[in-house]
Image (cartoon, rainbow, N blue to C red):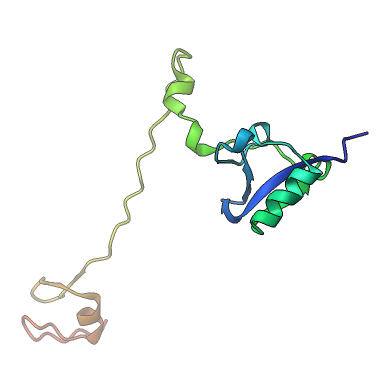
Amino acid sequence: MSNQNEFYLQDSRNYVGNDVLWWAKDGAGYTTDLRNAHIYTKDQAVSKHRERESDIPWPKYYIDNKTRPAVDMQVIRIDDALLGTGIVLIKTKPERIKKQSYRCNKCGIFMSEKQYFVDICHNCGFVDNH
């Protein structure tokens, strides 16, 4: 059976994405990684909460049953990971979106979409019934 006297302490003022911020070991800042979170006794956690109400005590057994594996995109680099593997990634080129262009059917001048559909060329005065 798990120890009912072990608690994590959440700093409820902020989140990282959807992840909870926990007090890190020995009060060394905050962490989203429970492996680096400080484990408090019930009395310690309650005392911290009384000092600052945004520090929320959570039973360790409860939180440990709610964890899931995740990878923080800030700590991975594909170039480093593939170094020495011989794998070369295909570089995809962004698809170029072709913008529709409009020309007068008489003089050939480029027109804005708005001008084109008004049916009057401001260069030659041609009225198109397209």
